[in-house]
Length: 86
Image (cartoon, rainbow, N blue to C red; front, side, top):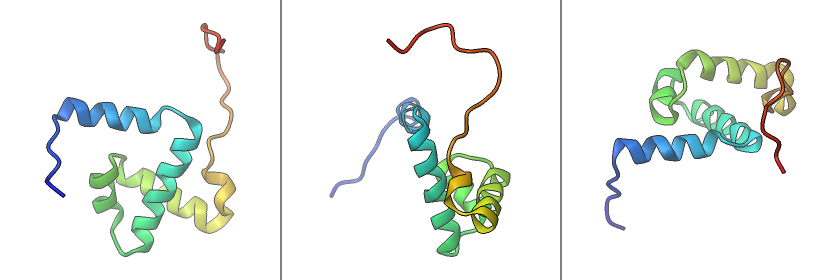
């Protein structure tokens, strides 16, 4: 396989696409925890997946104390969106 070369803007688009849905956020968090479980530090993982080291630590602690369910995106309070999904 040849080396993948893409622009920084395209990389940002990919990251935004990953973060777009609630399930992708859950998968993203699981990937971060898996990298920590494989021996990477939260600082190294943060460079790979683009979140802060503190977020990686929070996800890891939530997983260790509460399991999978706490990693899922919960409903948020606040003003509802102006656009409908229909």
